[in-house]
Length: 182
Image (cartoon, rainbow, N blue to C red; front, side, top):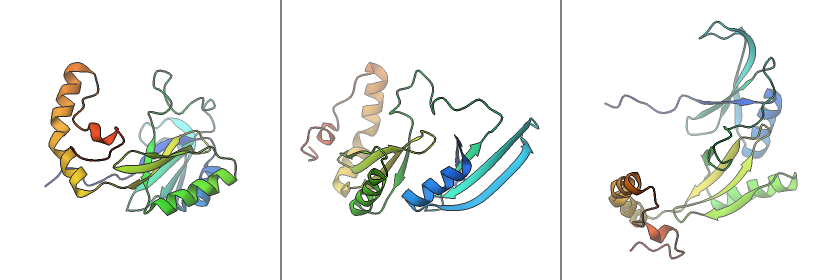
């Protein structure tokens, strides 16, 4: 039996809890499911008021945010040594059509959206929420043949990367434009 049984929730800081709930509802049809507010942190007993909101993002997955009014304003959602494109939350959607509708709705409201980007095994768009967190909306496009090919080379690729710190070419077909498993 596996020790882990899924993700209970993923938590981030937000600038404004109400604005965050409304944004996720408007653009991603995500349901606001719970709010917890305390004047003391339960785990550390630190006196620090917060609003903790929980948003259902489908499939039994929950995204949570903390609004922390006594802390200095958020500067960036990631550390200064990590490129802005690196840390992000990728959310699944059911179709390319749904993804493009979300993109159009965001762009109509002036939200910058990158993509769709074709990653061969999925297509995605990238955007930021009101607190600056980078999000990706993705739709799977892999074939069973692609999944099998990637399964077969994953350890070889990881071991080569660990030795060389250069991109292995075992799955070059993903990025050479052919999309054909060699």
